[in-house]
Length: 484
Ligand SMILES: Nc1nc2c(ncn2[C@@H]2O[C@H](COP(=O)(O)OP(=O)(O)O)[C@@H](O)[C@H]2O)c(=O)[nH]1
Ligand SMILES: [Mg+2]
Image (cartoon, rainbow, N blue to C red; front, side, top):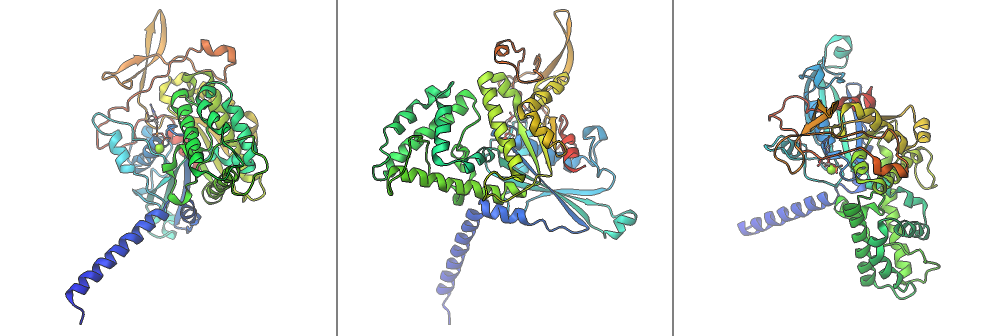
C-alpha cells in the first residue's frame, strides 16, 4: 500500500523534475545548436510549401518593426484593397491566414509588438536583441484542377527569422588570429572619437603582465572597461563597427553560447602556459568557436535574407558615424560573399538565393528622395558586390511603418515636399522639411554643407483593431523580390 503522504511526495517530486526539465528545455531552446536543428527541418510536400526569410541588421535598424508590420500585412493583405499592399500573389486564392511559432525557435512576440503600435498613444516596440521567429501560415482554396490535385489544404508557410546583425559583424574574426585581430582593433581605437573613449581600457591593458600567472579578476576588470568603451562608442558617438558584437548584447545569446570576456592586446607574442596571455588567446578561440557555430547552424542555413540598414540616422550624425556604418556594412556584405566561397577552410559552404538590402525608415524623407537613398545604399555596399550578386541581390528603400504623410508647401516662394508627423517628444503633428539625401557618399569636404534634416517620429495613430496592412512604403516590394 502506498500512503497518501508518499503519493503527495511523489507527485511533488515529479512536478519538480518536470519543472527542472522544462527549465533545461528553455535553456537549450535558442542555443545555436538547437536553432540550427530547427532550421535544418525543411520538410515540405506538394501540398505544403515553405519560404523561410531571415531579417537581420544592426541594433535599431528596424528589424522588430519590419517583422511585425510584414507579418501583419501578410495576415490582412488578402482582404484589403489592392492599394494597401499591391504585391500579394495569393489575393484571389487565400482562404485563411494565421500566425504561429516555428517549432524549436524562440517565438517572436508579434501580438505584443503589434499592440504597442496600435496603442493610444502608439509606441514603437520595446528594443529586443535575441534571435526570434514566427510563422505565417496561408491556406489556399482548393479550386481548379491543380487545387483539387493538391487536396483540400494547400498550405504555404512564410517563416520570418529575426537575428542580430552584430553576429555577422564578428565573422571576419574567424580568419584572424588573436594577435591580428588585436592589432586591427588597437589601430581603430587610436583614431577619431574612439581615441578618447578607449583611453581607460588601453591604459589598463598596457599594464597587464602577459607572462604572469592567469589572474581572472584582473582580466575581468579590463574586459569590463573594454565593453564600456564599445557601449559608449555606440551610444555617444553612433559608431557601428564594434567587435566582438556579442559583448554588446550578451542577453541575446542562450547560456550555451555565452563566452568569457577578452579584449585586444596587440603586443602578444609567444604565450606561456597558464599565463594571462594564454588566457586571452584561449578565450578568443572559444569565442571563435561560437561564431563558427553561428555560421554553420544559423547563417549558412538561411537562403533568403533581408539586411536592414538605417542609413538616414547615420547620415544625420555626420561623417564619422556614416563612415563607420559603411565599414560595418561592407563587412556584413562580405560575409554573404564568403558564404559561397569560404575564406577559411573549416567553414562549410553555404548559399543565399536571394538577398534584399533595405534602407529603412524611408518615411523620414520625402518620396522624391527615394532614388537618392537607394543610390547611397548602392555606394555604401559597393558596386563590385552588387555586380557579382546582381541576380540575387536587390536594393530597396522601405518604411515598414510609415509615420509621416507628405504634402507640398510653399516656402520662400518655392514649392517643397514637407513631411507631416509627430516628432519624438512632441504632442502635436508638425511639418518638417527633411531636405536632400545625397545620391552617393559625400566627399569629406562636402559633409558640413549637407542639406539633410532627419527627425524621428512617433508611430502613426491608427484605429485598433486594424484589419488592413499598416501604412508603409515598399514593404510589398520586399516580398516581391524574395518570392517572385
Ligand atoms: N519612422 C519610422 N521609424 C522606424 C521604422 N522602423 C523602425 N523605426 C524606428 O527605429 C527604432 C528601432 O526599430 P526596431 O525595429 O526596434 O529595430 P531593431 O533593433 O533592428 O529591432 C524604432 O523604435 C523606431 O523609432 C519605420 O518604418 N518608420
Ligand atoms: Mg529588435
